[in-house]
Image 1 (spheres, rainbow, N blue to C red):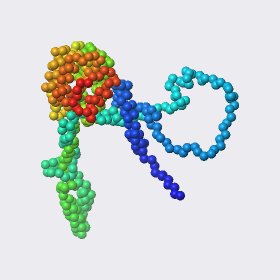
Image 2 (image 1 turned 180 degrees about the vertical axis):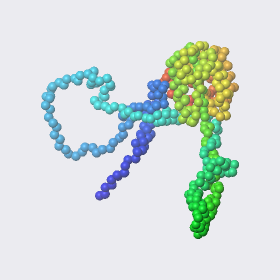
Image 3 (image 1 turned 45 degrees about the horizontal axis):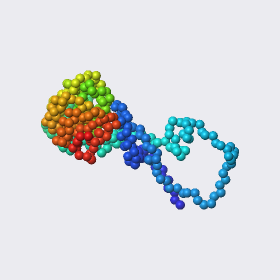
Image 4 (image 1 turned 90 degrees about the horizontal axis):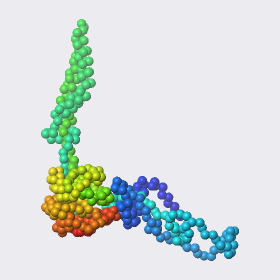
Length: 429
């Protein structure tokens, strides 16, 4: 009988393989836990990992084993505490066998804790945005092209004459000739000094003088044989082409900050905006975010002022749309940028302004944006702005409107807006 012993060291990535296998096997349970976590997390930690809990019964596996069989003799221990007919005292606690703890007791007298599994940020986002895609992305050819920009990148030894650096080449030539002839020139100087002494001596030294002169001529010939410039000395300016990212996107966040938008409504909007931003950064290399807040007047602000400024007033939604149009024309040409926009509001607007918003979207913004999503955060009945926007969904496939009533609706609505399995034509929710 042969025995095989595997003495190979465990691979460093072995735990990673096992981890991915576990995620694939229990993907549905983990995805449900990730989806539920969205409504419970704060705004600042949406892009971190998550600790998910999976019921033990969901990860239990069938086990084959050999059952008890055959004839066996068993001796059971005796009972030294109770006699026949004795009554057993009920355990202390909440009654019905629950004990003194706060959790729920098992009806069978035993149980197991849920299995807690920690997933990383990347795993969390992969599960969060699985089966989602950016609508109309296939229409944009910029993300399929690679543009290059030329940069200086030192020197090289070969090239075309137009890129030859003469100064750099001459410096190399001087350095090479000094390195190759320095020893010979020192020897030549010594021989010339010795020759001068022999010639000035009162005694004649014809043989020695002839020998030294022969050495001097040989050294001069060897020094002269070193070329003034060699192909090794030539230095050409080197230029490299580096890819320039063309897959660029800008996300416009438009939000109503009128008196009816309280902080809870703004927090719901912020959660939706962060989901959209994280989704875009996983598709594009560069994502710019432009925040525009408005009441009766629109203003471009930073993120902190966008969500936490106390400035308020009436509501004219068209002011934000006009400002977005101006910013796009000035800084984000549609032939170079993928433009996305998300507008959050509670639906309040001056009745005369809603048709104006519809005209601006129809003629100016929707023809140049990849996708425009309007989310209305309110529990009230829809008003004139919703009705005007609903008409546009029948005309433009890159425009969608959705209704959010609470924090729990954010992620389901987000998946509806970007689900790759449904048509990009979005209707009213």
